[in-house]
Every structure is written in C-alpha cells, then in structure tokens.
Image (cartoon, rainbow, N blue to C red):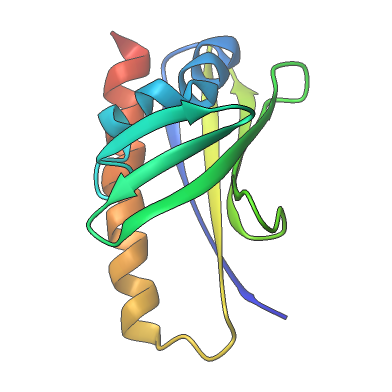
Length: 128
C-alpha cells in the first residue's frame, strides 16, 4: 500500500465556492503553480506543464459530494484527493497525497510543505 499524507485548512467560504475553484483546471496555476505552471484543456483531460515536463491529468469532481480529485490520466488511483466539508458558515478542505511505500521521509515532508502553501493560496482565492 501507498503512504497517505493529508493536510487540511479551514476556509471562510461555502463548500460550493471551493469545489468550483478547485474543479476549474484553468485555475490550477493560481493555487498550485509548482505542480501546474501552465495548463491546457485536451478533450476530457488537461495537459499540465511544470518544471518536470508535461503530463496529462483528469479532474474528477462532485459539487454534491464535495469532492475534487486531480488524477493521472492513465491511472485514476494516482493523484491528489480533495474533500470539502461544511464547517459552520465556511468549509474545511482536506487534501490527501499518496506516495509509493519506498518514498523517503524527507521527500514527503518537502512535498507536504508545498501542499501547505497551496492550501493557503486556495484559502486566499476562495475568501476573496
């Protein structure tokens, strides 16, 4: 099994606002610039450009369920899994990444530090 690491953030915006923001592939560079410096729609998928080259993703979302998953176009078990849950007048956004079991702890810590910055950018964008 892979190693799951989750971070969360409270956001003073309704769940619908967050799901709409997160499910919009065009907005990925706004909140996840290290992951998606540039994006382009390509049919049902998105072509994402980053410092690591280009790759294809699929965004699977449900406003009703409060889910937004950013998945590998080739394997929908791989990617980032997001959940938006009501929290009073706002929301709680939970973001989970899966790492191969042999991933070094320092690499995971570095990636999760990037995730924390992304969550903060989501909060700022959603609360505008």
